[in-house]
Image (tube, rainbow, N blue to C red; front, side):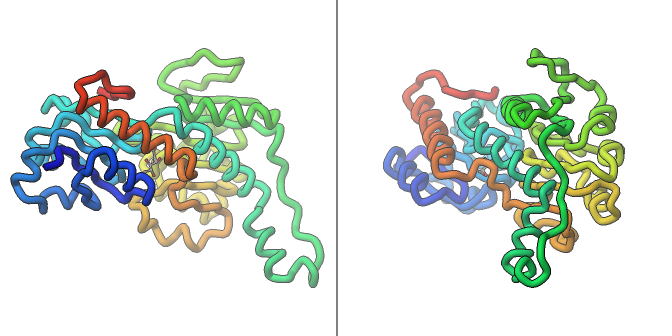
Length: 312
Ligand code: 8YV
């Protein structure tokens, strides 16, 4: 009998690779663990976790011999690491392999919103271009001032890309970092006041909840664009919706939301947003690398070797 459990909606190739390497028990999400028979739960020592359903102490207690939770993703806010620590369970994630893709999407969201690419595409497909002539003028993106909220692995890669667009780079972070001359703001309101575009690249979890507050959003102002590729929880979503509806900010490019995939229907009525279905890391190449790293962490644990990317 297998000692590996895989939670999540894996792609066919990840599912096949997990099957090949571990013949795990597959379940859709955290809530399904309780439905497994007692003897199956008892033997599980390693868990491959994918998704955003909370996995906390009560779920861990259903797997009394669990030794590792290998998360598929860099962000592991769904996993209660304190509860894992209390039970001696190691947690791993998949850092770095997705930095490029997530940064690419952040830049794409900024340009797509600033250059009004969705409305301009509609202008072509509706026949308006032929019938009515040119689309309205959009705004210049290169050369603006960008503010990165959270200068971690992904924030840094986004900043480098935007620097190549001749942007002045500003950032806020827990502490000032070594940078090629980017400007640090201890206060996110000061950051938002200074910049044209705010790009949120924070880690998720209770410490960053609503970090981009109503005040930060207001400080961005009526020409500001907000991009979020981190977690819906990092931005005060109600305040963001109010600001987008009233024109208190110009627009937003968003890959992440509260209550995904059942997002607030107010988003669907806006014409100043570009919305993506949480797919920052969703390319074949990157998902293959994430799956490999997750499986390598599980294999290392099962072989008694050092974990590749532990978080606790
Ligand atoms: C998800 C992500 O892990 O890495 C992260 O933190 O948010 C994504 O890559 C992926 O969607 C699987 O749930």
